[in-house]
Length: 617
Image 1 (spheres, rainbow, N blue to C red):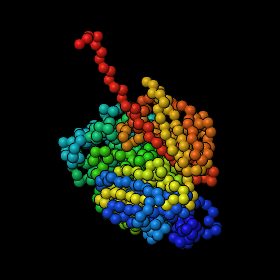
Image 2: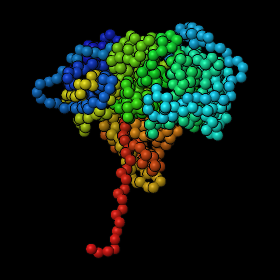
Image 3: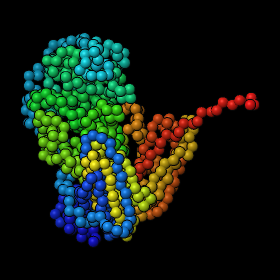
Image 4: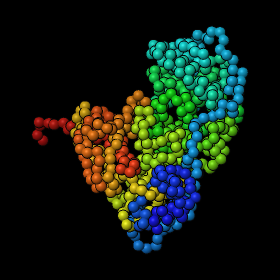
């Protein structure tokens, strides 16, 4: 059966919009894609792709819907095997409904829904603020409810604005510049507080001094794991006037690291932490004091960064970390303080993108509902959306897969996974390739993460696909069937020469899909799941245009062609610090896109020199 007949039988997704029956002749843009829910029994799923579909794009998404755990998984392909046949892809009756993929809304909240609650009894700042103040700050690891883990930090008032006052730890007065203080006050008064007030309100004025308080201190990092970079936090207990010190400072306030420098990143961290205070204020005013689960609370605060619109510097590297290793990045993180999960960049990127996807496709009061319903976590999300988490998650992963091949899903207001985000070049989610050369791919899924796979099929042959996963993962398997092939290149980067200061690298490319393909961008970045780098130390590199042309003898490669780059150079210390992830973005003449990935691991250390002796035995 041809793909047009198949689409006519099952319906189609055209540019992400569900259509009953075949696409209208008036639909002119984009390829057709059908999505299937593959049945899973005892952790095992299998289906057959008939030979008449072997020249089409087939994507596979394997997800763990369990919220905790690591699960060994495997995908394998067998071409043209005899014997009992598994269900044919054409006969799978459970077609995924994706009507929520399209029609995104701007991320906005109707200010009328807030009323005057956020301004209730908030006095205007009057008189002169106090010049010195003591703050209880947790400086030791362990139970945050234990008073012994806190010290009293003496601080001096260093800056005052219309809505903000900034105190600096006495020990850090010499390192906090006037430019940092001016940035905090100007950004807060002119942009951050007014914009969030229009959308979700402002923070409750606990100490009734008319201003929001910021404390700058290097000591805020002391209680956290050694490899973690903590630039700021909000403590919900500070909004509780009934708690004694040191458990509460009884003030509307946040804590920022005194080592932060002026610039967009400082403004975005300020916006993020202030958003936590605003969101917690809404919970206390409208729903009562209840702690939101960390993964959702952080995603909501990152979403507020979008509302403020100052910078993506607190998000770009986190989004890229998720896209580079999607099977290691969890949307739901039940225990953020478990080793390896504290402040995980990939987890944060996954949770943010998932919530952003929901916000774009739901009504304007979505964010406000999340902090006023009196529920937390998945229950809160399902009540705010009216859709089961498993359905939301599947539709989100479908969007991720389609966007990662350059298909327009969601319209102009939708977050797109190909392109540039701040300092980072995004390459969509990383696909593993399963095909003739690699007929089996083993991987590990974390809870609420997904492995995205592209199936490279042998022309004119039927193919059996099997997925095996620990049943405790509660696996979810989705197949996407596209009408047109996308580029598929084998891509490698190797070290040609390793000097003490400079490493010489070469890239090798082989076209595998039988398509004439044009090179567009070559980019690389550190693997963020394994690096303790600070935000300022994270650098992403991109070559395109003339720079990319200087590496390759030609920018367009023919079907089956191979290409080796000219040598290019990187500082040797970049290779020794962490693995590097390389991406090569390509496009065919008819606009189909793809991204090829490879890893470059640090070279092994040189063996120690053996001592030599002139003595004979």
